[in-house]
Image (cartoon, rainbow, N blue to C red; front, side, top):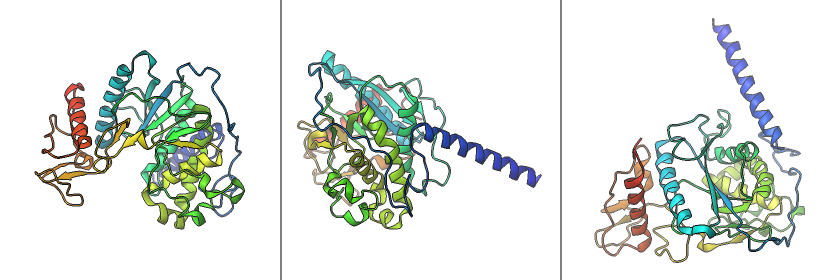
Length: 362
């Protein structure tokens, strides 16, 4: 019996590996621990197709629709955030009217199986990475999910907005990309120059100065669909190579996949227009202003006089991590007087979504 179980497991493992290999081959980039053409984890990079440096749209007055894609697991934590995100996506797209460039929406669900929200949110089911491949870094499922989606889905729009579950759209988003360049939010903690020695393992000197790597992650980014189809497999491969490189893994930690996207974009000569107004991040950004997205990645802690107590649990707080295994209740208490507009707006928007989304709860 033990021998039979062993061979059954072996057959299943081989089948999964074969399916995974075929999918990636069809995406023109093999998934493996070392990169195509690499030696001891040093990237020589896969074929690069250069983007024209001055590509202008022939139809400048035509709407340039983009498709919004959000990768997510089937966890309670990811699910309630994605439901809130999709609620506001629909509302802001409607607010934008006939001139709105926000096109379709897809939740790329990388749990490998459908869930009960398939009818509520347009969803593509992607397979997770083979067990153990992520080495405990679950974020690696994001580039792998995009590779599958871009290869298999019928995406009508010519541009893609890569977004995340903890994004809330506060006003209709225009297509900010231009002339073959992507549009991206610059992160202060993505510092290619600081890590030049490490990054040269993945971005060889013949690709130009290290400043060709933009200080971005993969989200939020608006980029041409055809460009992303080239970038995504490289993003996957660079992420895996960085994760298996002890020096890169230690240096980049939980933002490793962000560095990998920035490198992959530069390897394919797809530069990015840096838009500081693309999103705001409470509690550090205090006003909505001209920004388009609230990214609520940081906890918001205040005393009852409205003073920020960051690093210390406040008398009033909103932190998405408080709801990692439960849904936020409806009608969350608003912050005390003196708390910035950005935080007040965030809580009000979560409350509106939870009040209006049918069957709020797991």
